[in-house]
Length: 396
Image 1 (cartoon, rainbow, N blue to C red):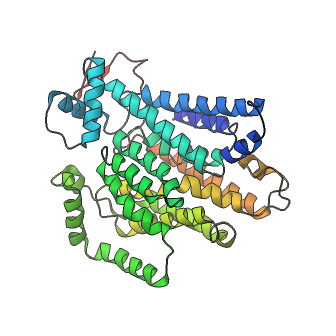
Image 2: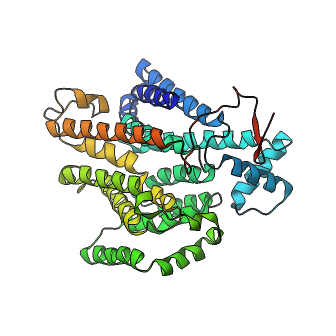
């Protein structure tokens, strides 16, 4: 826990040195070369990548499904039966061909690098304040959860990146990107209808229809479970169906969505109503809240929920930065200016409440990170251990 706490503190401090993309581009207009401040920003961003990708790539036996993935890699290598998607299988075979054997560390390392790159680029390009987005990325445990289910968190990063195409109404690019991601984890296909629904202007009758559909989920659990298993047959007759998620299992997701909902409602007119991006992310949060509360009986409901609520890392900074200031400063807002005298009182209060919530959430995450279903603690690196995990057993 101490290591993860320090990792969070150090990386968030580095993120404070990264300039927002919009501000950085504005200063570069009409200039040749790079200023010292821009060079510092690039260096900090690159260091963040090295720390995140390196920590994930150097892990061994960290994550609830690490050993299971090693077994899957082995079955792919020998031509056995696997339920993983073809794009993932082709990539594993290619990497094993390059390395001349079952080098599973290379596979985990590549996914660590690519996932870190996509998450960082999505936050840097799409957030109004990179520092706040990155702090949420760490404090909400999203980064540490990438140590689990490498296929899923890779496509989750892709979905966060794909939001730009929905907002630009470049739907063909959005669908194509999601179809490519589905070659690694087909559950990502669910975001095509969900994101497009959130992008539409909602009318009262549509909201009423959606509410009726949400209510039908817990009332007709058997029917909807059959629908889900028809869409995702690999869950049939598996241990996942024996685990009753329930509202208790979805509690943290509900709390997150409810907290973001309250934050959004506190400044809806100023920050959401007329802001297309924030309104889109806010609708995704509403869909996520409905999913966690009404569909908690579904196996691994969090996998579908995270497709909707990962946009919190973009929405929360959008709300906080959109709140009015007492004396707006030239050059745009930033997370550090929230502490200055010119920031509005309401903005400061909501910032400190958000920070307190995130710190409590991070503390709770660390206290439960060793449990089954998460198991990202304790952290082990293959550099500092002579053990290697192979086909479900330690070898020396």
